[in-house]
Image (cartoon, rainbow, N blue to C red; front, side, top):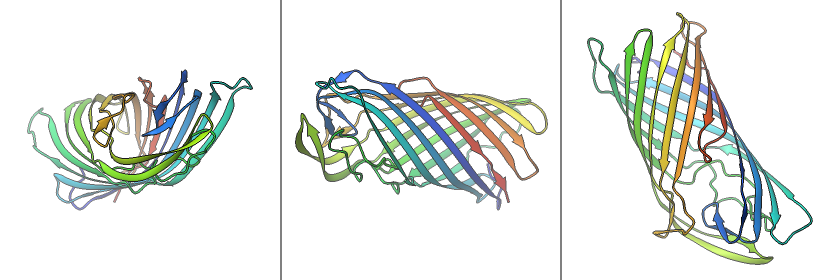
Amino acid sequence: MTPQGTFNFDPSLQYSFSSSDRVSIIGFSVLNAVLIGQIDVRSVNRSNWIATLGGRYGLTNRLEIEARVPYVYRTDDTVTRSIGNVAGDELFSSDGNGLGDIELAARYQLNAPRDDGAFYVAGLRLKTRTGKDQYEVDYDSNFNLPKELPTGSGFYSLQPSLSAVLPADPVVFFGGINYAWNIKRDVDTTIRYTDNNVVNFQTVGEVDPGDSVGLNFGMGLALNERSSFSLSYEHTWIDKTTFDGQVANDALAVQLATLQAGFSYRLNKRTNLNLSVGAGLTDDTPDTTVTLRLPMRF
């Protein structure tokens, strides 16, 4: 926890890459109610860069508040082939950049163990929808893919959490659970798409992206007075998306799993350098995630 009256400035830079291969599909809905007909998606390569300015302030020795402002740059390279096309594969590239979804959070330390007990911390996080979402971008009429990639989710989210930290010198064990309530909204927009060379329009009404449940656990090991190493696992279950209260026939619940290794080095009394590398363990998780943080205390 951040001591009372102390401000922590926490800038970070994160890069993630994911790739996927898909078989032939006919009349398959992707990108939240955008219907793709007669399209075979061979492969998709996605790269995301997120630069974040974050800050935490200690209101008391047991209560802190936090704000995070991300800037997002994304690129997608998609190789597609129409089912009836024998000419070969076609490459469609798109990108997007801009302000992401700003987050606000508060955390409270529930106890103060005297001996070798664990510290318990309750938290509440609000994710806004300040970034441009998937319903605010234009789609290419030939590929039915976005010309500009969104930088936000398009939905507000409220996430309560409970975490525990158990010191056992020189090791620290930690873990936590969380629940994210992704708040539905009336999108009220019309999307233009092409099906077998025929232009169609689809109206999108109320969309509920589905809630999620997550857990994480791991351990940190002090190597010396200035450096430490950590290993952790994170798993998230995301429920199906519904449209106007109905679950689409092809909607699937999503599971995200990441195994992460981290290294921390104290540059001086006020500044740390943190580097972490994550490996995705499910098809829906980014293959690789690298995060560099430079927290500074004032």
